[in-house]
Length: 313
Image 1 (cartoon, rainbow, N blue to C red):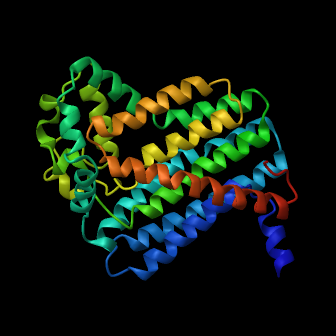
Image 2 (cartoon, rainbow, N blue to C red):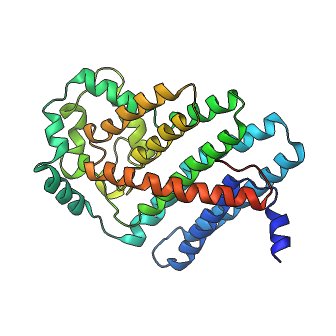
């Protein structure tokens, strides 16, 4: 049986494997909470389709083994991350049914004696806000820049591992969202409706905010946005994934490492300055990084060994 299972998954990369396992787990959760997740049947179909597509892409890549098939295999997780994010949107609030911002606010006040976002407002000015909003918007591009820099330098095993680490890290953060669902200081400590007036930028800030808000299911005109926004505050996925990218860029001596380190550091600061996160969210995200990297590396090398592929040191 183990031999048959090994042959079945031989086509799959470590990334394919964790995607399949994660979507299987989401399927189980939807079945367990059919009484709360109203769209559970739709999500079951979606998960099955995604698993089938991943297996088909893996088989195609192994049979063709061309540069193009490898690129497809590298890039299919990009839209998948957003699809997963939206599935969690339909699951977290119905399953957990409560927000825990009061706990996060209390921890921040205990650490700093005040609300950090309110303090940062005293030093805010439009040029800084514009700059940090642009930096914040680079979040999804940083992992792509890392992967491209490694791939173009023909560091193929490092590229495989970097992509795996990013996808695995996203999944770790997604699981963590279930423990302390929260909506963030832009809703609880500030007036979300007047954000553009209270924390103005220059030219692109409002436009970028609208894109980000739409991605979190609150486009302009949404009634009661605090009720429908995604519960994705703790831990800060922006912090966690950016820190992973920064670490890997240095570890693998990426030619883009200095850009990624500087931009990443500013991005992490922007999560609080722009009121998306509490400071404890950032701390939580940073604490998740070593766990994700340690367990991720063990998972990656385990899969590489059983499929007789090169491991990462």
